Image (cartoon, rainbow, N blue to C red; front, side, top):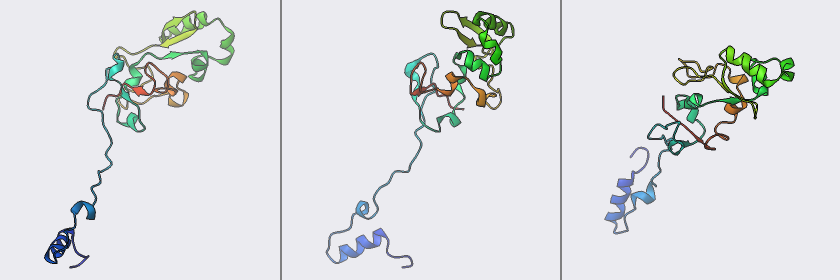
Length: 164
């Protein structure tokens, strides 16, 4: 036989000699193919119990569901996003909020905590999410909220995964 005896040949040979037959499992241990676990159902962003445990590579298969969640930002984020200049940092946050609301960039401002909430489009997408590619148009300048997701957020370590 070219390439050596097969497992079935070995079983037949040992049976003919009266020896114990070789087990197929002993000869060829069963190995499971390394397959990615894909969540069966799409998560509902409003129901944290449907969110899946985050793992590397999940974002590439997702429809950018995290980009439909409200994004809270601080003044440092707004500067990084180039919505506010460094010299404006000294202005009252309320004045900055008023200008950004007028420009349609923020939808809410929390005066006590000085947190701005970015505007979302009518379909719930972030203002900076590209509709076709579903990728962030300001990725290198994205706010800390986005940089730290899903380590920090409504359910740390989990995300609202929805397949493309």
